[in-house]
Image (cartoon, rainbow, N blue to C red; front, side, top):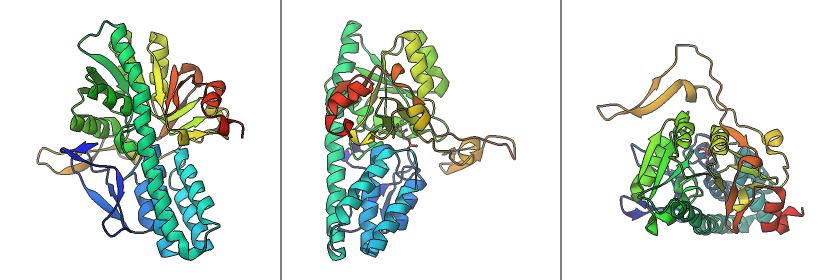
Length: 366
Ligand code: MRU
């Protein structure tokens, strides 16, 4: 997607063919800074400290992290060490494990002197595949927005509510939840987005608002608690969110607060869709609420907040009294029964074991 009119992806290979470049998302929306990743340690830091974030982008960065690791040490030991270190960076997004398993299976049978080339090629393919998948999510989700607009007699505005950032910044390009919105906007459907700010890290207020603005999509940032009120008053036509891990049963784990939006949508008869690429499905899990481990992050993300001061400096300030305890649960699980449908690259399906199995029979039988 475009940044100041220039097309960008979120991760790419530098001209030297070896260094990986990313956008430091902790600096957005105030600063657009490109950061080089030169080795395994850089890739681990980028994921752990959320310079890159969002399930599909975490997967693509992990794949490039394996390639960077092979440059440093392509031995069997180096391979295992890279897998383990990248694996422990963030626990929720299953795309991380998916990408690491993919690279490990590819590289293990290859002689060490061929591993660097093979790893870079596969990482590039994973990135390209993500772009293709997300574009298809957009194509498959766009008709849902169009139908909601038509159902209300094609008013001046069709309102979609989204949570966190599930846009192109969370993927390699296009996004998951935002891909249908971009496609609808580009097709002339007057889509307007309610953007949950998404405390504590404010991925909605900082990242979703920024990328929608860059593409010219009308949007309004709301506090996380406003969605229920808007739904009660007919101001939300549908909700679309992303997911970091989807159980085979259709339960979806996404940024903390998604579950409350789904409850409010259910109570108000507002359709609640979740957009996901196939690699986000964890076929080993059948009860998302019980089985998906929830990332617990540092409490300072709750007690402090970053923003731009009137003099232009980007700074962090403390919100709470000194010494206040904070619990920082980063994700929650929305049970399948609250999800109207799953938007995938293979089509839109019911959030259920049967619905997912019908779209992905080759995995569901495992
Ligand atoms: O903690 P983050 O910013 O990595 O969380 C991201 C989300 O919750 C997204 O909604 C999710 O990754 C799905 S989007 C592609």
